[in-house]
Length: 255
Image 1 (spheres, helix red, strand yellow):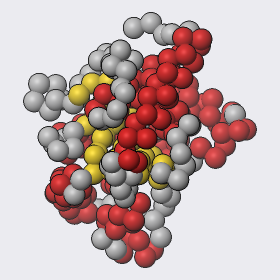
Image 2 (cartoon, helix red, strand yellow):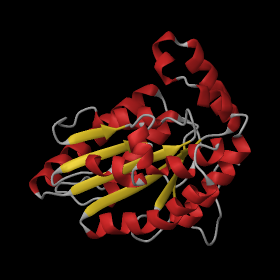
Image 3 (cartoon, helix red, strand yellow):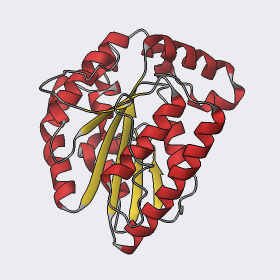
Image 4 (cartoon, one colour):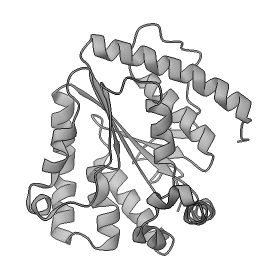
C-alpha cells in the first residue's frame, strides 16, 4: 500500500473532521455516551490519532484521558476504580490514551503486577465492559501496531527532538528489548478480551497518515449520525482490521 501526499492527506482529514463535527452534534442531541480506547506499542501514534480526532470538537463534551502512574491509594483500590470517574456521561465523547489494558500490556511484560492480579483482570474485564455496553456506552477498542524497525526509528527521533522529551520514559528503552514479550502479551489480550459487545480492531500504523485517516473513518462508520457522507467514511481494510480470534490469531499484526 502506497503512502499518500501531504496535500491529499490534509484534504481528506479536513473532510473527515467535518464528519466528526456532525457526529458530535448528533451525540450531544441524543445523549449518546461514546468511549474510544486506544492501545498499542510505544511510538505507534496514539497521540497523533487522538489529536486529529479532537482537533475541531467541542472541549466541553470531549475528553482525553491519559492517566499516569497510580498512587499508593489507587494501587490498593479495586483496579477499575481509578478509571470509572472518567467514563462518559450523556452527550460526551471520551478517548482513553491507554486504559485499563495497561494491566495486560506494560504491567504484565514489565512485572508491575503479579500473576494473580493479571488473571483477576483478565477474568473480570470482559464482564466490566459488558456492563458498560449494557448501560448504553458505545465502546470502540483499537490496537495500533507498528513494525520493529519503525518503532526503533520513532523512538530514536523522539529522543532527539527537544519538543518531544515529555514522551520519553524508562519504559521506552525496554520496548525493543521486550519486543517479543509485548507481541505475546498483545496476542493473549486480544484473544481473551475480544467480544461481540466490545470487539477489538487492529490498526497497521507504520504509515501515520493512513492510520489517522482510517481510524477516524472506522469510528464514523460504526456510529450513527445525521448527514453522514458514506462516500467519505469507508476505511481501508488493509489498515484497520476487525479482530478475528478464530481465523487469525493476531490479524497480521507485527510479531
